[in-house]
Length: 468
Image 1 (cartoon, rainbow, N blue to C red):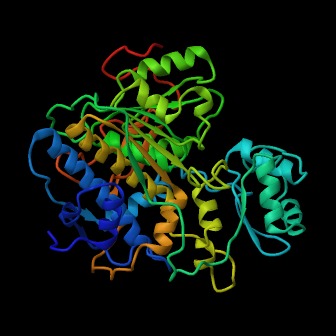
Image 2: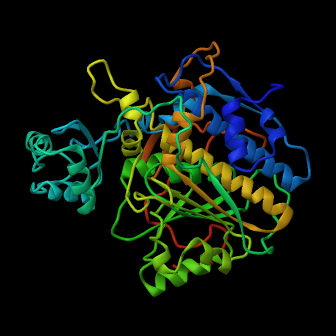
C-alpha cells in the first residue's frame, strides 16, 4: 500500500470524519487516461470510490473487532461504473438518451441548459415558454425543436431560467468559467453531525460490511440510487420508497436498482406515513434525495426521524445545498455543471458549452454518500449515536473545481468490456457495469437484479414488518 495517501482521497475521507491515518490504506490501479477532461474527473471519481471502499472496510473491522484492511481501486472499473447508464442494454436495447428538449440552447445573450427528460418537467418547461406540451418524450406529437429554439433565442438566459423555475420546470443559465486558482466559497463536500443521544443498536459480527443493515431509500434518478445500490452490494437490506403517480424513468431504475427492492407509499396520507414509521422503527439509515424542507411538511424532518428512532443515520442529498437562494430549487447533474461554470470550462473550440465525460457529480456524490452512511454506522458502533449527513451536487462540483489537483495517469489499458456482465432480470436480460467498490466482504456483483419499480411490499426482506 502507498505510504502517502492520495490527496483527493485524503480530502474526501477527512470531510466524512474519517481518521487521517486510514486514508493511506487506499491504493489505485491505473488504466491510462480514463474519463479525460479539462477538469480532474478521473481523480474525483477514483477518490469517491476509494473513500467508499475504505468506509466499507472500516465498518467491517468495527463489527468484527479487527484492523482495517487495505483496499485497491481499479480505475478501469471506476470509469465503467461512472458511465454505467451508457453501457446498459435491456434485451439488446440501448437506453433512451437525453430527450430532444434537454441540452444547451442559445439565448439572446448566451446559453441556457434545459432538462426535460421527465414528462412533467417537459410540460412545465414548454408552458413557461408559452408552447403547447404536445406529445410525450419526443416522437409523434412532440413540440418541434425549431419552435422551442426560437422561443429561447428571444429571451436572455436568466429570463429562461427564472420563467422555468416559476413554472416548476428546469433550466439554468450557463455561467462563465470561474477562477479555479481562487479559494472560492462554495458548498462543503459533506456535512456530518451527531444526532440525539445514544441508543442505536450495535451491529453484530458479519462477513459483509453492511449485512443486516436496514436502509430506507427515498431518492430518485442517479446520485441517491447509486449510493443505495452500493449499500445493497455490501449487504444492506435496501427498500426504495417512491410516491404513487411519479414513475421513475425505467432505464434509470434498471441501472440503479440492483440489490434493492422498490415499493410505493403515499406519504401525504395518514396510512402511508403510518406504514413508513413502522418501517422506521427498525431502520438503521434513511437516505433522502428531496429538496430541503419537502419532507418536513410531512412530519419527516431529519431531526424528527432521529428523535423517533435513536441511533438512526439520516443522509440527505440535494442539488444545490440546504441554504442559499437556490436551496429550494430542483436540479440535476447537467444543470449543476452549467450553473457552476463547469460547462464553460469544458467548452469546445467553437465556444459551445461542454460536459464532463460522465455524470460525475451524480456518481461521485453517490459514492461519497454511501461512504458517509458506512462511516456513520462505524462511529455508531462506538458511541451508539445517530448522525445527520448532508451532501449536494453543488458541493461535489466545488470540490472538482477548487479542491482537486491533477495526478498523472498511471499506465494501463482500458476496456469497458472487462467490467461489464450479463444478468437476467424481470425486465429481461441486462448488460450492465460491475460495481467498482472492492474490499473485504464485498461481492463482485449484486446478489439480486432490479425488481420492477414499485411492485414490492412495504416490508423488510426478512420479516413481514411494515404492512402491505
